[in-house]
Length: 90
Image (cartoon, rainbow, N blue to C red):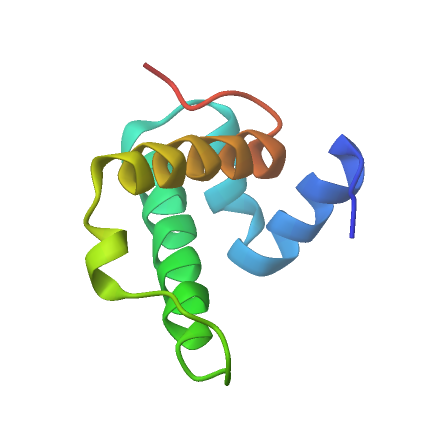
């Protein structure tokens, strides 16, 4: 499903609470890191679930490769940007 910025922010506010998302929008470090950590956890859990599907070959060794880590991190940052409506603060 594709969200517009307003709908994404509304969805995130419902999921994490208005004060948490307000802190993310204000680029407060702990909350921004918390959102990024949650995205990472959700992505990891989803990828772990792939190994339970017959015919899907997704080894743990592949997940340790530098190319995988780079792609994972780029994807994580894109998801953060969509959810927060802004890039992760540097």
